[in-house]
Amino acid sequence: MRCSGARGSRSGEQNMASAKAVATVVSITGKAEARDQAGNLRLLKVGDALLEGETLVTAAGARAELLVVADGSIVPVGEDQAVLISADLSETSRPQANEAQLADGTIQQVIQALNDGTNLDDVLEEPAAGLTGGGGGDGNDFVRLLRITEGVDPIEFEFEGSAAAVVPELRAAGDGADEAQTVTTTGETETPATVTPVNDAPETNAVAATGEEDAASIPVSLSGSDADGTVDHFVIKTLPLNGTLLLNGNPVAVGTEIPATANGATVTFVPNANWNGE
Image 1 (cartoon, rainbow, N blue to C red):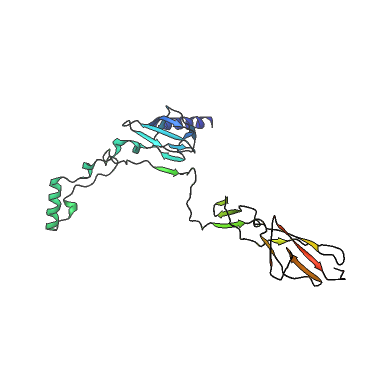
Image 2: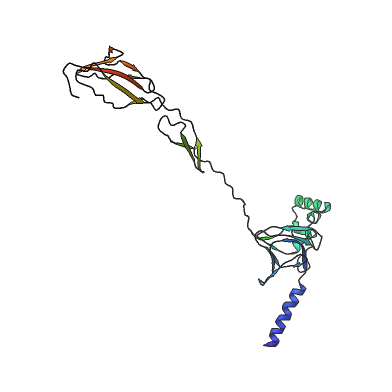
């Protein structure tokens, strides 16, 4: 058992030792790890080598830059990514354009074969096959990403909202400027608005006057209030049944306007002879 375990350990060390260093970490921000094919993780720091077959895993907010050993190019790796490390990282592994071109003589042979109805397999060279087939430029110039997570910070969306609605809260007339509340789909804002009040009718106060029976006259003081200012005048709606109402010695009729001063005015009541009561 001990011998078998020792042999397994040496085999694993030999596999790690035989792996080729493809790139070196030259810059790192945040947390980045290298994961081998067995799933083992090692924390990376500047100067660490990344071996072929490993996967570079960056955490959220992490960044790394790799120096490719083969050609000295720099490969940036963003956050939340898993990048397979292989020879494809090298610029020199790109297949060259001339490797896929047909020579001028070959083109003429193909054209002639097409015109003659000859099988092209008899004209063209067979493709390389087997363990030694293919050139050194059969790689790719891309980085294989095993996982990409893109975060948007801050998150911003644009929605087409409905029109704002105005909900007024009006005070009674005469209280000055009122406030209106504007409600939108994104929240509430309070916007002061000036509202012109209507000219409300003034209000009169109930008054009572008393005097002696058969008195020459009894003064009656009229008073009222106006929310929009001061009382301009009083209008007589009904007349007393047991006497005469006078203004400056002149009888007052229904509809007569009594001028007001400082929200008040005075008229006189002359009772009928021998009358008393309310």
